[in-house]
Length: 212
Image 1: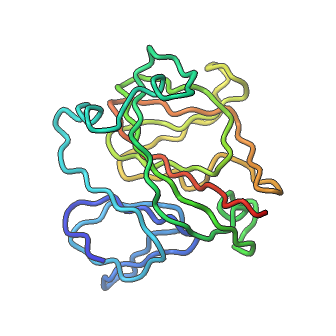
Image 2: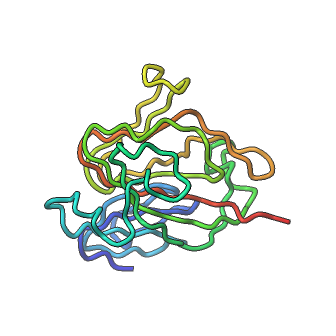
């Protein structure tokens, strides 16, 4: 696979990806990098994003399907918070060990099937994107434009912040914030995304394929 133009490349798998270069070049599991003028020699599955235009980046919210999170059906998110969400896309079905993904085990051993779904988010600078702790899936995030933070809190209060993970362009949150439990259950700490600048980021969700 050739990356000609500047491209954010996310490795969605628990195995490393490799470039076709003289010196060994690796995209580690669940991480990302920015590539240009190179060839990816080996990878199980990747997500590729090319940022074509950065001038007036906020106009992305006028593209089809984008809306304020508070306007989505069933959402109780405040409508006066300028957090915008794109449509969600199905990226495929993969098999990973969720315990290894969450670093609760040191090597993959228990494969489970997940449907990978992705969407983009946009928020202007200095936006708190809501402290929450409920997800029925595994999630990681990739910074596409600007600088933001993934933050953890002891309780649902901003002054209880205890971890501040800086997200710069091309960076992926390598370890999801959750703990994995039996029967495809996940517990998250109180957490949120915060935008230092005008930001676009991608949520990568691993939805378990339920076993009946």
